[in-house]
Amino acid sequence: MSDNPAVSIIVTAYREAATVGRAIEALLAQPIPEPYELLVLCPDDETATVAAGYAARGVRVLRDAGRGKPAALNLALQEARGEIVVLTDGDVWVEPDAEPRLLVAFHDPRVGIATGHPVSTSSRSTMLGYWSHLLTDAGAHRERLRRDARDEFLVCSGYLYALRRALYKPLPEDALAEDAVISGDVWDQGYLTRYVPEAVVYVQYPTTYRDWVAQKVRSTGGYVQSYAATATQMRSFRREALGGLFAALSYPRSIREFIWTLALFAARLHVWARILIDVRLRRRSHRDIWQRIESTK
Image (cartoon, rainbow, N blue to C red; front, side, top):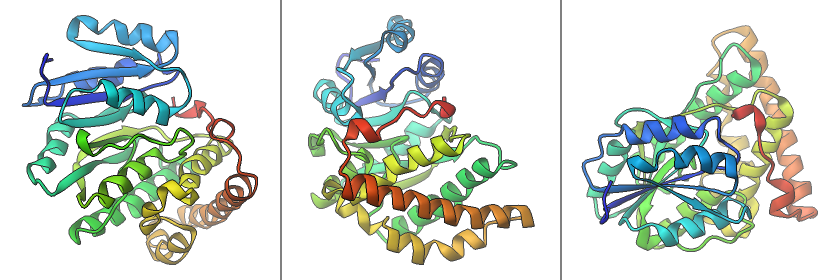
């Protein structure tokens, strides 16, 4: 840790006392060559207590008001002192060397933001686990690789990404997909977005259909908000329907997985219908749509 950090690592967490310690341990083990600081931002006492246990190792705990992740990030970016800010969550953990690999992207002055590679820890032997692998591998991973190779815009994953602090614009507190908004803001300022597939972050995905739908409505729904207009270059209902069909149908390894893939098409239609109703028509608030997904903890 350093009193004059070049890098600020920010962990946002909410009621994640059971997982935030693992996230912190993985970050403290990173061989980061630059001086850095590690901040944990949370509104609840349980998570703060666990994070405070790492104070002797230089971890700082910040308390937000519990108004949601965009408001928490606005506070964190006011407190961060590093030129480069790394953002991650309290319910995921990074692979050794993930952050140094991510930071290499900023050796190019044209790069304003870079994202790591989410890898599902869910079992492929269940339908929802299989969906998580299909969407991360055949979906986001392949699309980011393609766009990165062409210097095209890509949306960074909120599970692990980094940006130049000077490019951060305060987020609207009702933004549902803050990673999409931040990615678009940086791109609109004339900087490149980069994908670093070697910077792996491990993620547990929902294990119940109810949780799965709630998570997807929250994350995908953010793309229909005006704040994320730039992000629709990478994700929209039309792009998903036209561009994702072949990749999805070529992913299964068995008849069972093929059937699960067909079921995913129906589930994605369900999600987009919920987005149309809840976000576009009913204009439900961030607080109503944002739900804690218990099965990912």
